Image (cartoon, rainbow, N blue to C red; front, side, top):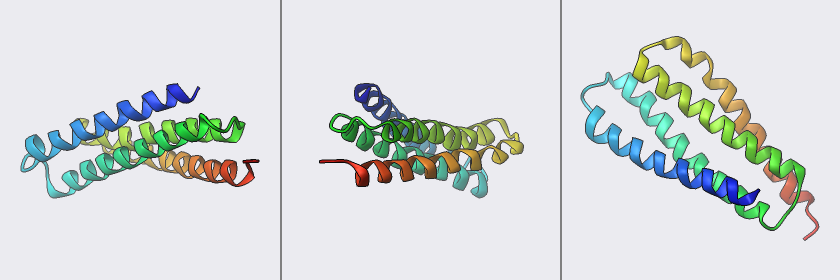
Length: 124
């Protein structure tokens, strides 16, 4: 299972780099400063959380713990919901997508807490 999350983390990292470059070169000046800040937040979180998913996957290679697996899933789904809802908001102009973003944030928090719990309760 760790290889699946390693692949997901790698793909999300590549996506973060691509979208970050797209935003810096193609969107700067085309978006309002507020919308560009939202795009930047989505890109930063996508990049940071993708590295976290990679870290979880490496820990999963060594530790077979259900909370860690659930945490990796929460981190992955939280990243997709958090950053995805912000990207959709920017590209469609539908501001109500901003109401979905906190769900992703909550999943991110749950994922990180489960990761911490897994590491602290492991019998190394």
